[in-house]
Image (cartoon, rainbow, N blue to C red):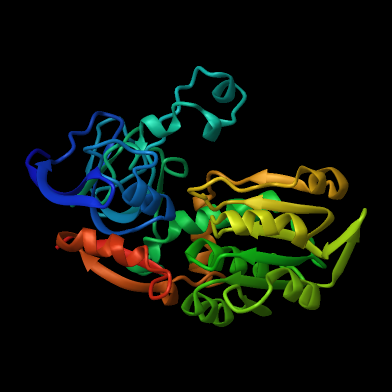
Length: 353
């Protein structure tokens, strides 16, 4: 398919312009999708607000659902007209990490992936390179509505995060941050299941959503001492020379330096800290707490779209109530500004006209 399309093009921090650009050309192993809806990821917000991760001229957007409109002649198992989502993953195939099947650690990943290096889905059309069902492309079942389908990718990140934590049935979990990924982590943890999930957050809107999504307790980080409340809700965790809280697992989905620092106090000795949020500023870490509490620390990059789709299909994870705003592509800049407003927004979607 040749022709022109509308797309939101990044130029500099907080400068996003909707322009007419070429529709992507596909090769024999690629597919072209007509975008139905695309969510604004936290990493997109960092890119938009601070210029992190991308260069001038980038079309962002990787949390999307679309309709397949063209299929390369070498592609198998994908049909024109079906709904799906996917991610062009720019692994090199030659580095140490690719050869050891740690693909998401490939240094090339963000040079040639959907929304990073390659044009993304804040546009009318998006290309998925090397489209393979179950890998770079996933069909969306009829039971999942369009807007929910646009959250499959962030839910997949939440699924991967929980898998990394290896939760047990009697675990007490504290999730820091209640944006869409934090709320999804909460729900995946509850479905695991674990004993208790507590959520801390600075946005009252997001805290209310966490209550509605099944949190056993919530902490208003603007009005309460998070550590003290964690001790009251989860228990006191004494360790060498001091005491913290007793969380078996702490998931930082807030991406704030203060949350990073607090996580080392809230986790029990020998517990797990999972980092999935992306702070724009460096946190100050007391390494003595790592030495004396010996937590297992994991970074959570990547996702499991197949499992995310199954959880959404079964309604074990619900994201539709977390979608607070939907903007047309022509108002993409306004959509990004709203997503930056944690007081009023949880998940913002952009849809082509």
